[in-house]
Image 1 (cartoon, rainbow, N blue to C red):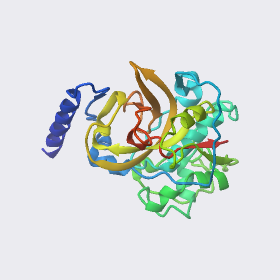
Image 2 (image 1 turned 45 degrees about the vertical axis):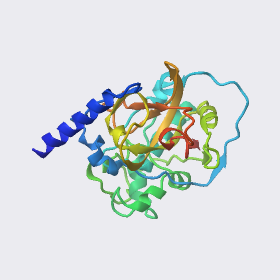
Image 3 (image 1 turned 180 degrees about the vertical axis):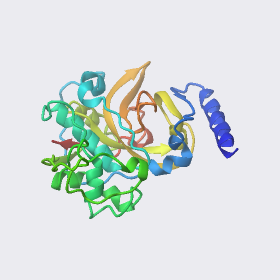
Image 4 (image 1 turned 90 degrees about the horizontal axis):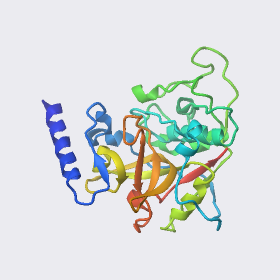
Length: 295
């Protein structure tokens, strides 16, 4: 009975969104994915950490009008994960590590790296579950100082359980842990003092995907396709995601962003969001705080 009522409310929200004049995106109810609705969205929001960084210097080279790594190099970047109830920074960080190592030819084929290893082994930040506040301050620092192993060695389990296990001494199959893979450093792409970070992000994207965060409002949980612009709803927090490109459609500039809700969400696991709107730090603050890893 309660589920039917919630579903009816969600359908009414979609009807309202579909009838907004000039709206540039489509909405739908994810009946088989209730975790993307507002009642569950708080499990998926958090702040991006602020690691020690080096500011990227912009160049004056001309930029293409359209660029998408998921199309240019799909064998490296077109990998979309579903992080369940444990969508936190470590998971986004290991995804982008795999993308960039593949793009730079450091791995012959794309390797999925273990976020579970970081969750289990970073005792300084992680206590017992994905919801621990201090877990949000980890990720890049651990990858730089300690590295991680492939997902095939220590598989991701926290997405279902929400729990953190013990730091493993062997792989899941009881084989010896392989050599760890490290990040070298993290570069700051966006500047809090500069509300116009659009060009910085575009130039950084020429080198590979860029990690960012987006402010989540109620209507975002209904996003299905198109170029997202927030229409209404309370602010729920922040969600970490990954710039993979940019472009223009029907005169509307957009960022293409990879999410972590699986292929059934949005545009095959991606969303597009308005770019160059004149709003300080971008639509839903997506241009406010972003980083690029050096592998």
